[in-house]
Image (cartoon, rainbow, N blue to C red; front, side, top):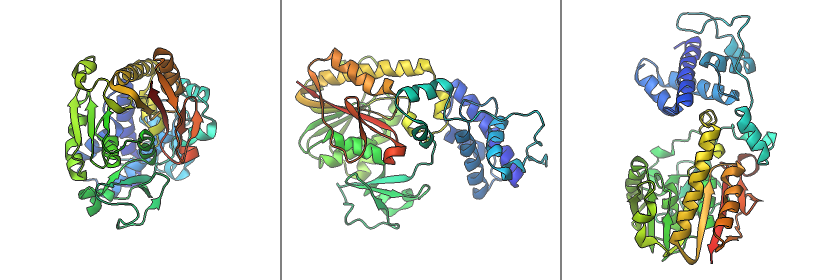
Length: 392
């Protein structure tokens, strides 16, 4: 592909990503993969270059663009070398017209930018949400330790006890240590919020929204494979990915339970009032993960945010039933919006007077409401809110 053809390919992909964002369709990475499955002639350098153009254009736009071309024109305004590739060549993008306007820049749609500002996220912190994320791993202490593990590259030790950082794009999945379960890819912030739960050997712990189980694996390592650890989710596809990961990691204590929405407490009857700790890694807007999924800010609307906050409240209510007296609830969202963080905990403390906020001793983050906030600009992690509650 010529450089001009790469620009045109990026425009076509951006059109698909914009349409999918409006319709809540497939995510960008899947659209990109499908695009190149149908274009086998594109080599690895072409695929990488087009992908970089696409994500650079997504990051350059604030509100959702009217078209992929408008998004690429926004990027061209920032980079004259890209503007020159709108040359009208065969397979290339048409020349830029005098009356063509690029998509607006910014961090996000206006309503979402205002919500971030109201949540105490200043301009610099908001801009950092669109930086490229590094690659963090967690050394699995069921099989290894950060102090002695040998890897093909030397990682940067981070504040979490087993965290190492590598440059973006490092192919750790190809390393023997990954294939045999000695390391897992996990953002530094995710590792820290797992440490906040302080899961211990012999405890009964429930990961209420386990997804594919990244935090469950971290909890299993903290528990040294001793006790009971239940990983739950309502999504069969996500939860099904946990079993092979747990086998690779040697996390033999993990039990899984596929929940039916609205019947969670019925299906969790034997766990009611017996958990030493419940992790509520609640579904959320994902504003803290825009470094990895920048198009996510185009997929969110105010109605969806309201739906998510109701769900977060409901999950805390379920956890309050499952935790035993003296037990603890860890509430986590990968969001920097107060509606999905300190406001949810304030509301939970009103609904459940038996719950009391706990101090959280983390090496990073800042106190925010009754919890702690981690952010890319301040801590170099994804954005998180984490709070700990003790059951009376």
